[in-house]
Length: 113
Image 1: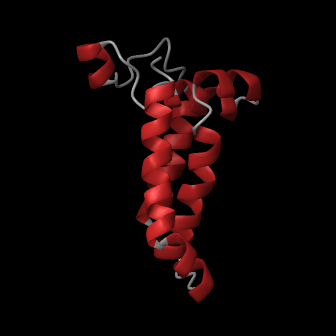
Image 2: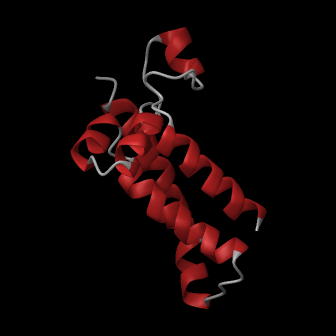
């Protein structure tokens, strides 16, 4: 329940406030090194997505389109009591987790070259 309330609060915040023009948290890695982290642009992408600007959201951070459904799947499995043996076997399989880590590292590399 608390997670759902936090998710709604985040959606309201980014739906009403543009991270590009309001004091929003800045990426520490980008500030220190100048390189984008895998999540850089996610705040602006979420704001654009909540306002129906799909192309802008994709431009800011395309990973958001893959991570949000994935986060929903993991959250549904863990928090909402949704227990499915097959889903659990897929979500927590070693290959799945290694693939997610590899994709994250690859995305981090590709967006900085």
